[in-house]
Image (cartoon, rainbow, N blue to C red):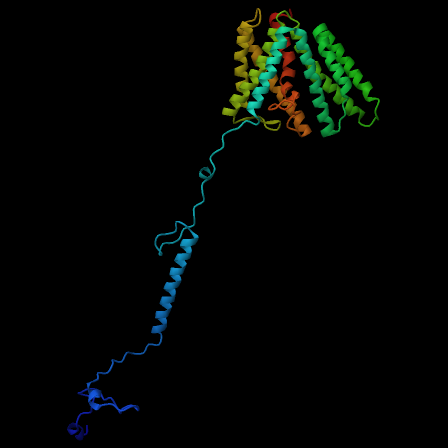
Length: 372
């Protein structure tokens, strides 16, 4: 070390205030003032510090903006920004739409009103003058034949001749009332012959299918209806016919009520999806109960146990008749045979269970209490 350095006066800024260096160029200033001025501390220069602060501010602004957007777009959002937003839960079907109650397929008010009106006409004609009731049967037969032949022609181009069917059908009902089963069979044969001859007046194309449909219609509608007229000839004929009508209606009502409330097992889904085994059980139970009452209190010399058998047979035949017409309507691709009766469809839609039941009731009545 140089000795002269020990004796040299200390440099400014080592023991005392730091050396400010030469005065900067510019206006002159007082040296005393310069000595009294304390210099600003020197802050290290970090070039990224300002940028990081700006980035943090930008991120905060973006977060605030996003929070406002989410709050405006989605009601009920999270109350705190650091919560993870959740997707809205789908509304359960039961909350959005209340479960629909079972509804009938038809207008029940119209159906009940029309049914009550028809029942009043039938009962009045049945107990006042028997011949008037025979006329009611004949009119129902003619209208039913018109509905059936019209649907066959519309849907399958089958032209069953209506004129011989209508005339022969009405004559068949009257013959069954006047001459019994023998007169009904003779009228049936003559009606079939009239259908064959009537169709010969047109070109031969489709002759076989037209006359086959005509003979089927003659048997299905008027011939089966003659058994109602034959029941009427007995001394207690009105009571027998009333029993036949009541049991058929009660069977249909029991099937509907029980099937609508408890039905879950399909009876014949390919033919009639609405019918259930539970409904058939309801039809049997209702018809057997009504049959026991009717045979005991309406039919002379009848007993309750005969009514049970009669009711069971009516429930089965009425159900088969309903299924039979359902087969016809499915083949034709229609729901109803007509629109004449509001809430019911057409006449044939009411005769579907009555027609096949008529010979069953007539036969059992003859077996149980005779034809008298």
